[in-house]
Image (cartoon, rainbow, N blue to C red; front, side, top):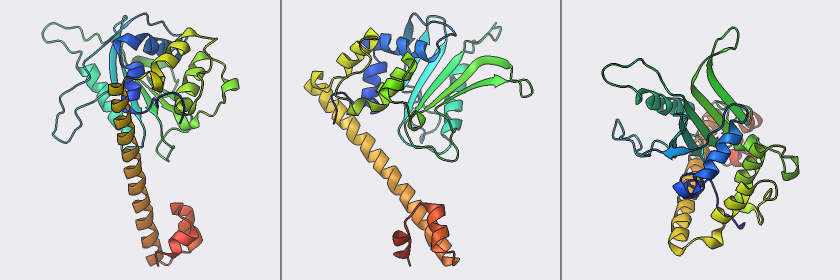
Length: 271
């Protein structure tokens, strides 16, 4: 266990990026993410609670939802495990942020841009992009020219970021290195390069948490681990079911192992 909180626990993520007192961290991160495009000087957090349309939909739609001083809407979401139709879900909630801009009466349909930034802290599967950062715009299919940037999705797949500390060349890469490794770090790197990482170290220091905050953090870590364990259990059950069906079809064990990732010993015990 390192010196700093796990930023991918729900409570830890919001402690770093979702508070008025630390919004300069989010502004800095977003400016490094969008470097060379424009500069955010301020932002306002919006109500994170949205009424679900059906009883089985979760009430918390966004981990962080804010608008910038340029009236851009930014959704920042963090996912620790794969969810079926995850990309469709992120598109759906981004579209709701567009629709919510509608004005009754006389309105010229001018829209403010909606950006969705998705931290994907799980291993890539066949349905996921195959690179660390994927930037999605509405573009012309033939020319690739941007048709509209009012809907933009940025997916950051952390397992595909493989740079070590000394290999990070930009502040954005330094952000990602820190966030990916923070829960195991004994010291905060890059503080001499940028004062924002000094503040991050102060905010994320586990020993600086009050007893109440430490209890909230510990509960958040427990929930995160329980969810991941439940997901891994469901995946394993699925693999076992596939292996059993292939055994019934008299498929060779080598082939079953390749398809499911189960070891030959595990498959043999299913007979």
